[in-house]
Length: 201
Image 1 (cartoon, rainbow, N blue to C red):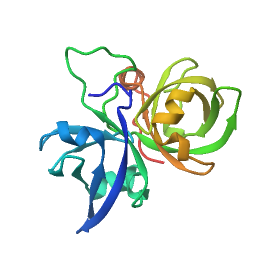
Image 2 (image 1 turned 180 degrees about the vertical axis):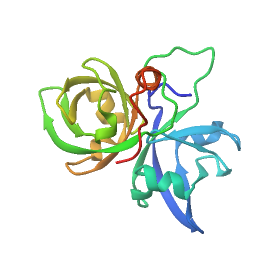
Image 3 (image 1 turned 90 degrees about the horizontal axis):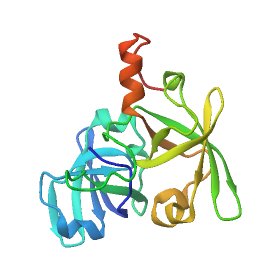
């Protein structure tokens, strides 16, 4: 369980194929505090730390299922990923409950720089219909954000300078694919009223 408050933007140092899986070596300041078996959110995808070869790097493996349903397979060496360690029971919840289980991916339709902020319009697949509400929560690449505006198949999030400066959003551009995780409360409510499953794009 996570909160969507990003701790660090890690750098992909190496990507090594292993059968249908990919093993990533990630450089990050949080590496020195990790132990094998720890859960870390990478662009909103919960992955397990496997090895910590140096005090500044660790490895994780994404299996084929994860690569097919998220943007983790789009990563290249040198890319930045948003990182968050799992929620501590004695910590503040500054964002919202994020499971690290990506529902599907969306596309950045436009980025508009404002005076002091950036507006991102992101399209989402039909499976997300009914799971977004204005001023509700959405995790985009693991970042807890507020839905500022909502159209039939796209939503707007307004990004403050701190978030731009401390996440991979500073490198995002129109047409990029981003991981989406909808608010868990909305998903449970939809399941209870029998609207149907999430599926993929």
